[in-house]
Length: 113
Length: 116
Image (cartoon, rainbow over all chains, first blue to last red; front, side, top):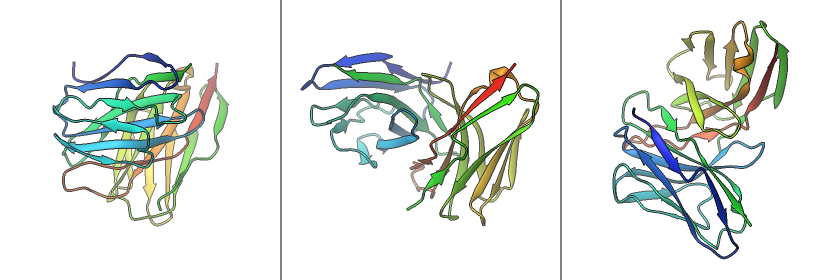
């Protein structure tokens, strides 16, 4: 089955720790994205990548970092510099077809202890 | 700056009713608009995508319309069922990147409850 996987489903972080969220897709999509969702709010873009070894900041990139070494993978690191990291994190991907739909993974819920 | 608004924030209707969810955006220069469904604690599922040149798209009991000039889109759900209960989000794609990436701008969603 083609799709997007995210792991872990739940993640707990202590103050001062860096944590990495995994995102993998087998849809052969070029573009990948990371979003943050807070309760009762829409999604906000953290980072996106259009091709391997290239990525761009979104609207709320401070305190986050990413890498894109493989087409299939786009991990997100939440650093200790992110002051309020507790949220639901969603990864997405899209292809180059005219329709350009974005497809989403199941999400990772991060909680700071 | 593009802003997307969805009103109401929550809606509760009895099973079997037809209903309309609203989405408005401030800048009519968009490439496409996408409607998503989100179940509690889950990711987003794409429902319909409307290109800027289209007026509407249909999938089963769902029909989405787009009026770019007025900055509005509606999602019509026919013969609602309890399984339709979820949060519905609309997202606007402001432009087409040559490489294909999109910076979607999301509304805050409408939480829909269908009562049996």
